[in-house]
Amino acid sequence: MEISFAGKRALVTGAGKGIGRATALALARCGAKVTAVTRTQADLDTLVHECASIAPVCVDLADWGATEAALQDVGPIDLLVNNAACANLQPFLEVTPDKFDQAFSVNVKAALHVSQIVARGMKARGSGGSIVNVSSQASQCALRDHAVYCATKGALDMLTKVMALELGPYQIRVNCVNPTVVMTEMGRLGWSDPEKARTMTSRIPLGHFAEVEDVVNSILFLLSDKSQMTSGVTLPVDGGFLAC
Ligand code: NDP
Image (tube, rainbow, N blue to C red):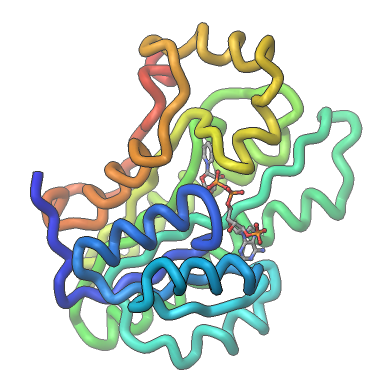
């Protein structure tokens, strides 16, 4: 399937590493003018070195005011990927308020805030647009030590549906992708132990974790006109995990 984003302007959060970085590069390859947002300048430096057309924005998305200031001059955006997230694994009985607040600030509040900024522009221009929120299989299935992470992703799924409801009249589509484990820096945090990894892969009908490319391809599909009648969905990229 040929997808072109020529003439489109895209913004990707958490574009310094992993899925976000690969998404930013794929969008640029498909012709989009990409703004990459993340909080580590060194990651943006290497990203721009890899693809000179990408515009970098360095900000901690947990900081509402700093995000507002950093994105005020970003210009019109047609395609938004809310990908940035943190995963602080703690057993339920040991969850701390600082980790709880950090996770909800980045994984939920920042997705809402960046979407507000971008969607207000889409509405004012009457241009429509497409937003993809990167959720997780963890939004719909309990995972040990993931209480806060699961709760943030459950919230993100529901936020996506309400955004689809309220932004639909402006021809703005909003969808989620919900991947299984991907061996990025975040994936390695929870699943490097081979025994633990085996317990997870044994529950995935296809028998293996997802690759970064699997997630990127689903994001590109949902951003593109190939999914122009799809809004409010949570699309598993999980080898069948959530079906069982
Ligand atoms: P990585 O940890 O590899 O990359 C996350 C990126 O987000 C980094 O560039 C990170 O920057 C950035 N980021 C995190 N917090 C902030 C912040 N406060 N402000 C700005 N940028 C921030 O994660 P993945 O690529 O694995 O994950 C991407 C998405 O996919 C996330 O939403 C995750 O929940 C989801 N997902 C991942 C799975 C996996 O197994 N990997 C499975 C299912 C879903 P920095 O490194 O500087 O903190």
